[in-house]
Length: 550
Image 1 (spheres, rainbow, N blue to C red):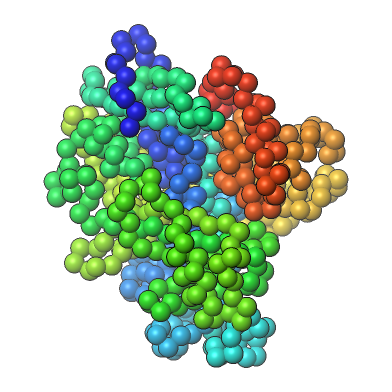
Image 2: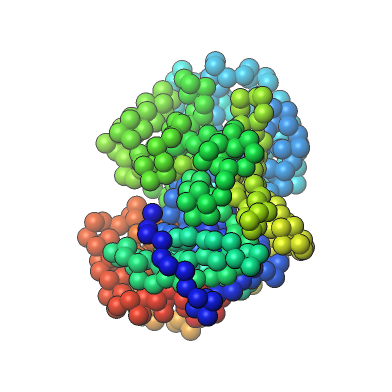
């Protein structure tokens, strides 16, 4: 922890607001967005980059409730399907349906029971526009070509992949456009109750050397602790709150387990239009998903973690374990030395009382403190349920502030999600994006297809702003990396809080998978040239913090 600065007098308060959200992961950004859209004055601070930790290290799947179906939790299945439907329409550019092949293993439920469950799931998902499930003979189908001959039967069903890090960034962008102040590389050092609310001290760090370059104090009525794995530290070290009744000394709920999930990326080893789901010896499932056109994402290897959030990393055993598990199924399995990228994240899993298993979709806990001043802490949560969690959190914050305002995000698009700007009619999220890409190519025939696809996937309809006034590649500025131009980099700095090469290569995009070490160094050098002293850095910091960025 940084040393605690002396409290400043009232006249030195830099910002007065209603709510301070601590944590710029997906849940913190979604909560800030929801609160700002309800008219609350919101400030969000994140000690690193947006989605720099667990929110950018998920398995990339928005699940449709099959886990809940296995527990016969029909209410959970319906909630999962509804949330997936809402997200597909809110951000069709960031979510992609993917067909998954699941070979039948003797350790699984019987084939007849699985087929019945998938059929039941299809009935509940009727009208979603997604391809229903089917049973296939792997010896007669092309889908069996990559699998070892002992696997003769499989089930194929549809899930949805999402760009998790960009979802967090776009929630923050929407929050800013609703009036929120978003501060990255800014740590909440301390907070003390004051005048019925909280007086908090925020420290902004230089993105290059990590040194504190500015401190400011803010006065808010309530704090949302969305620190993820850092939430216990926020409670005990920053807010100095005692544990709630029934909680551990750390402030964590008694049923919370921290799980470290590791994923690896290897050269493509599954079909480009189909992923796979493999049943492991331990009775879990490992996914092998088509990723970034030329790669396969494999994960997760999960295990309990109690060493703290700063110690989360991929162990040497993780790639070996994942390659060994998929090697039981694939004819040409990847080897640990084939791994081109690996990442790990820490998630909080809440147990159902007396059941010893993780709860239904959206299983999370919102823990409220009324005294000495209002605080709401988020425990758990998933990629699949982040919008619903944020809505429930915003409701509770309203209760803490004495005014529950109307929810609004259920039918609202995220930035870039309004593809109708170029379309005569809407058909389905997947087909709408293809039609949007076709119309954009007609308007800008000079756009190469790979660049067009990447931009429309990343920015959706907001690509029209990026291309405003652009008549050809020459108007995009210097090409810093192949198909990465200065026009896009300036957009990412001003609109999406990108301050380093890592922010761009691994969170605003996945260009890091395609870039050489020399190209990564060239991008880092470009950012170093933009970092012209702390004064200008502060201008970018505050300029990109609100919805007024140019």
